[in-house]
Image (cartoon, rainbow, N blue to C red; front, side, top):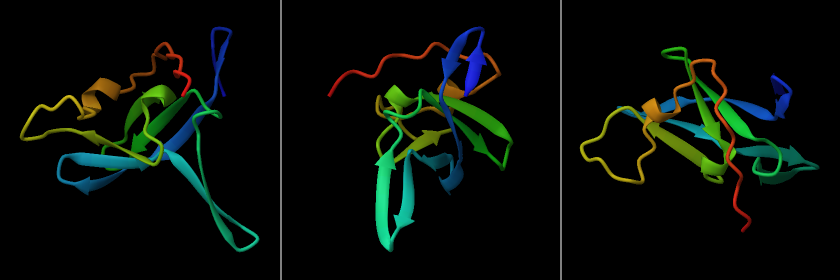
Amino acid sequence: MVDDDGRLLRIQCKTAWETKTGTIRFNTHSQTTRDGEYHESTYHDAVDAFVVRYPETDDLYWIDVAEATDQKMELRFSAEIDHPAINWASDYEFDGTIPSISSRPDS
């Protein structure tokens, strides 16, 4: 939980890793085993945002849960093309200022 001047936000902390040059990834779902059975669940109804740390640089990223995918999310530092589907790491850099949280549209 984060208290932003009376606005309580549910935050899930994640660690990112490099998947290929210029790209990091983090999981946007939870994986558990209960009674010998594998279970996955998303955080869309449980958190407002992810705070992601990339240990190689110690950088932090703030991702609104409404912008996150259901399984994993990639952030790119560079790419050969500029495609609208690319999630640029620079757009999510977290400087300690908590951004506004958008509402997730009903499915």
